[in-house]
Image (cartoon, rainbow, N blue to C red; front, top):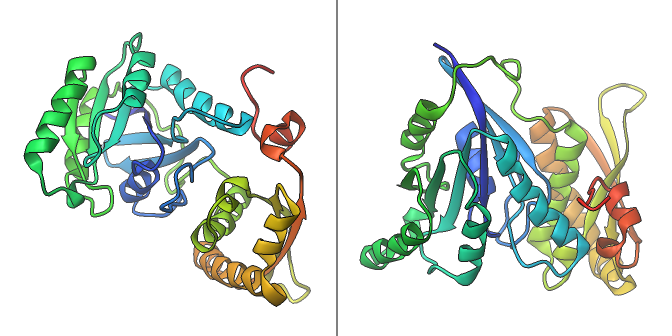
Length: 299
């Protein structure tokens, strides 16, 4: 009997959803950083074994938005609940139950599919009594199908979680061919690798204000190198100056680090050229949100 289905992973920003997806697949398909709201898009990761295909959906962190982009991100995450077979509600093991957690769980009150409480970052826990008390608060608010303590970073208990998810999935076909890891094209993953380096190397408001577009990808004349031209978009001129850096030093560092990751991902030599431009307040302007692939519900 072959089983298949869709599993969405939701929760607040920075709880480890993308790290979990990469751990399940043993391959990097979602960027990660210490910055909240690193994930902006819904990304599907495809897990295969001999008896099942599980399609995991990594989602943006659900939060109180201050921009139209933030509204889209939270709405997109909650919308996935309507189309899946299992929901994984992920929390940080070391953070206490909060009012924002309560609001998210209230939004799940009408869900008629299994919802698991996933307590992530078990590797960081020292006070297990506090953890148990905190988990009881979650259980008092919502009737979970089960609770699992895992470490997405180390993989602890992740195989056991996969087995329990599989038990709940229906018989079904393979939705994706063997060997396919994600529903996203190469261009999306490349732009995300560039954005990841910006998140790592900049601070303050820069990471939240940045968007990356891939303008062109083509082989050189000898067909030995893939040439990639990409644009980093920011909201203000001073942010552009920070991204470029003194004598172009920051832009060069971003490009070098991103190129190495892209070469590892693609398995070929890459020439990467980055440009920077300003699109004022793009996160609050419908034209740019649509142009960059974000489509708010109220269209």
